[in-house]
Image 1 (cartoon, rainbow, N blue to C red):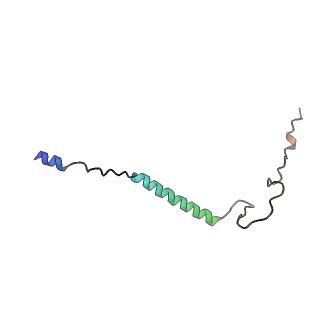
Image 2 (image 1 turned 180 degrees about the vertical axis):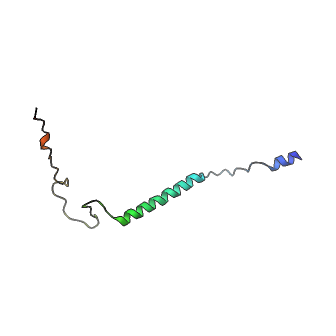
Image 3 (image 1 turned 180 degrees about the horizontal axis):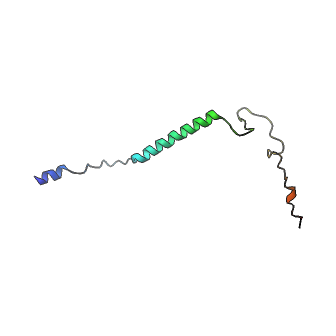
Length: 83
């Protein structure tokens, strides 16, 4: 009778299919949900930098001075001649 009990308690047969661990699946779902939430909040907030404008339909001229805002070599005190 011990042989019958031992044969009845066997490990389940492997189906040969691989599946990701549940923790990995849960992590990926959480990551996707957090990305979607952050994207939604960012879209609702809009641009937050000063002077930032949408580029959709904006065909205006470029900013004068190459867009550097007045930084055209303005390091005059760094010439190295004060030895």
